[in-house]
Amino acid sequence: MSEDPAALSRVGVGIDGGQSQIRLRITGEQSAPVIDVAGVSHGVDLEHRLKASIMLAWELAERPAVQRLVAGLTALPAEPARITALADGLSVGTGAAEVWLMDDAVTAHRAAFAGTSGIVLVIGTGVGCLALDSATGRWHRTSGAGYLIGDEGGTLWIGREGLAHAIKSHDSRGPATSLLDAALIRFDTSADDLAVRVHNHERPVSAVADFAVSVFECATAGDAVALSIVTAAAVELASCVESCLTALPNSGSCGVVLMGRAVATSSPLAIALIEILESTQPSLRVEVAVATPLDGACALASDPDAGVYSPFILATSSGQNRAIHDRQPGSAAAAYLSSTAGLLGQAVGAEFDAITRAASHIADRLERGAMIHTFGTGHSHLLAAEIFYRAGGLARVDPILIGELMLHESASGSTSVERRAGLVDDIIAGHPMQAGDVLIVASNSGGNAASVELAQWARAHDILVIALTSLRHATSSSARASAVPRLHEVADVVLDNHGVVGDAGTPIAGSDRQVGPTSTVIGSALLQALIAEVIAVLVDRGIDPEVFASSNTVGGDEINATLISRYQGKVRSL
Picture 1: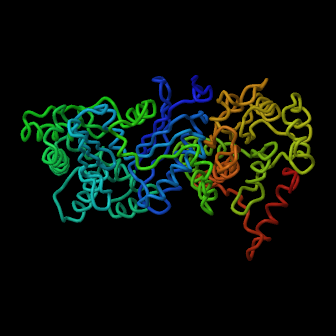
Picture 2: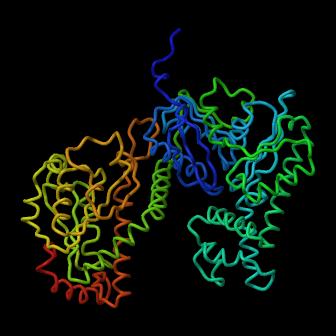
Picture 3: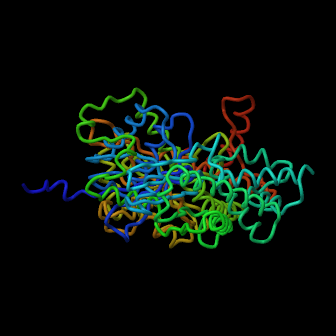
């Protein structure tokens, strides 16, 4: 019987889902890039948040056709029905023929021992320890109780201990420690505000876990408090191994493998832990793994079956599950909002430098009397209008609004017109710009002739060009071919909206179409952030930024009337 051709064209996908990051890789492609997205911690709406993050990673991998998706996850819903719903949702969203969900300690064990006896100890944000005695088929699991009541020795535990001792040092409730200065630098705050800054961090679990790096650095430098934290963590981790050996004495026949960035070979934690295990279990072989839980997930995605790991598959899904999948009310809305929030979170970190750099350049030009021009075609014209005549916005914004390139005259016609070469002369004739001005061009695809040629003309005439685009779409092999360069290739500064290829990225059960475009939401946020920073720079320089007030507040009309009269002749749409 021949194999199904469709199955032959599909790939396996492995996922390692932690609290700090979620990582995805296509199996069988050692050179395949690892896709990283923000991790998901325990808490409310865990099922939908996990699905949204995993779907985002799949989107960023350019939506591969999946035969089997294996996800080893640190955080999972408590109710079996919700875990099954997550598996079904991922099967629906990715079209995977099979989905297996399991704890990340299981994928770590597969990476370390491939089904033979052994103890794997995974130290990440949390901790997982899993032992197998292959002769008896018995397993033992310890730790992994979550950050609220367990995970002692993980990076979140270490980071929390480090911050607690830093605050005690400041309060004179504990010994002096270099951890205090390290915390103030890492969180960019004062000692009095440290606790508030940590609790109000956008992603506090990741931020506290990341502080473990500072604890390790201080310990390596000889700080006594940091050393005591590392030693205490090593003792906690060693107790996990000892628990496994007590329950399954033969599980250590192939040794113990330590896994995770916290126990890299030169890590003070790895050194301390190995020293304890060598002293208490001198015959036990201990090594730091090169492989990762992601490698184990990828291996399971390619294996003929789960083998000895079958009991640890918490939920499976297949084509049959998809056929009877019962969508939960609100799940699509929750998925869209979660994925959009995730993209915005990426943009907050990744685009900060570009925003501040662009703001400084724009402020320089505004200080010399320049105007800001904005341009976009199709739905991107909404972004051209987004920062025009807005409460809290700059008065010197002049949008280029051309009917045939917008939606209200003919939406389908605008698609044809925006691709037409040679429009730039007509655009400039109707909307002159001067050397020294600023042009912000929004184009999600970055490949339409009207936008690209206008940007090229502007740069050739000493006009600062800021591009707002999706680099993932613009550089994707799935992007429509274009006779012109991509917008990001001809701009002075690029703001990336981090959108998926095709803009719409939310799957719907029973439909082969993705929904929920994000370019307008993220683009608006980036532009408003840029304008806020420009205004702040001008205020820092002692320059009146000329900001509109809300016309629906007392005194707003009077403030705006002054600015309107000042720029009525320069801003065409006023």
